[in-house]
Structure formats: C-alpha cells, structure tokens
Amino acid sequence: TYSTDTALPEQTIFMPATVPSTLKLPVILWGVGGCSDTGTSIAPFHEGLASHGFMVIANNGPTTRTQTTAASLTAAVDFVYKVAGTPGRYAKTRMVVSGWSCGGLEAYVVANDTRFSTVGIFSSGEFAAADSLAVAGKIDKPIFYFLGGSSDIAYANGERDYSDLPKSTPAWLGNDGKGHVHQFTAPDGGMIGDAAVHWA
Image: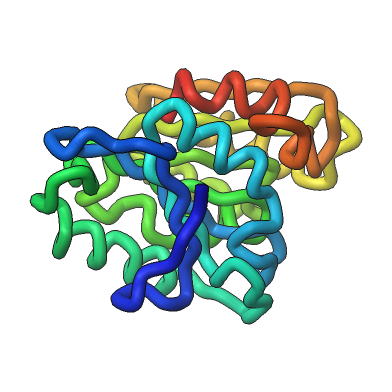
C-alpha cells in the first residue's frame, strides 16, 4: 500500500500492509525515472519491496510529475531522522539511497551522506568518463548496480561506473537482460524485484 505524509508532501510512501508496533522498518529512498515520474510510476516494484518489510519513499506524490533534484532525497532522509523513533516507523541505521535512470544520478549526488548505509543504482550511470572517476571513484560504502543488459541505454555508463569504484568498496553488478525499464510494472517488479530485496 502507499500513502503520503503532510510532513513530506512531495513523496510517496510504500509500507507493508501490517506493521507491528515494535518494528522499525529498513528504508529505501528512491529517485524516480526521468527525475520527474510520479511516485507511483513503478508501484508494483515498490509494493513488492514493501511486502518484504521495507519502507520505500519515492520522490514525487502519487500523481505528481514535477522535476525533482537530489534535494528531494535529502528531504526524505531528514524526515526519516525526525520520526525514526516512532513505533512502526523507520530504522535510521538501515537506509538505502537509490534511483532509476535520472533518479540514479540523484542518488549519486547524496551517496556520501553518512546517514545512508548503502547505494543502489538502477539502469543509470554518469555520462562522461571523467565524471565516473569523480563520482563512482569516491564511493566507499556498499553499492549495487542493476542494469538491463546491452539494450539498456544506461548499460555502458553503469558498467563504467562499476569498474571505476575503489577496489575496497563492497559492490555487486547484475544485468537482467530486460532493457532500461526492466520488469518494474510486473507483479512485485519481476526479476529485478526478486533480486533487489537481497541487496537493499
């Protein structure tokens, strides 16, 4: 299920249908495709993650298509820190910043924020080789890449970013061969949804 919160009006929040009052959920912050998609544009994928016990906060409201920036992800993590102690809410020590396509570039911008424990890049990557070195080359926390194979327009960029990571950085890269859009709108996000729950 998804909802909104008056304290975070520009985001869409996905949660398990039932959350025990004593449980704190790990959090996935999501930069949307195009940096402008609605917060529900790939709802089946996010609902699948939520069904495995994650809280997902996606940029933009359920029907809103506004241009987002990395500041939207920062606003979301600020919100999490304010309410992390609320029963049935968030575990601030387990937060993933992630995004798809343009949203993945937004995730890179804030990746070194110490409040994030992990980074997830979905069909995204820096456009220029120099930027790959400058951005991916400085990532020092666990990071995972989900690419769509050679037909994915971000394939080469993501592969280059992965190769430019510091050798000491825990990292994983997978290609599902489904292209740039993967199976995000299939039930639970399809193959990529099944894989993502093991890395978030």
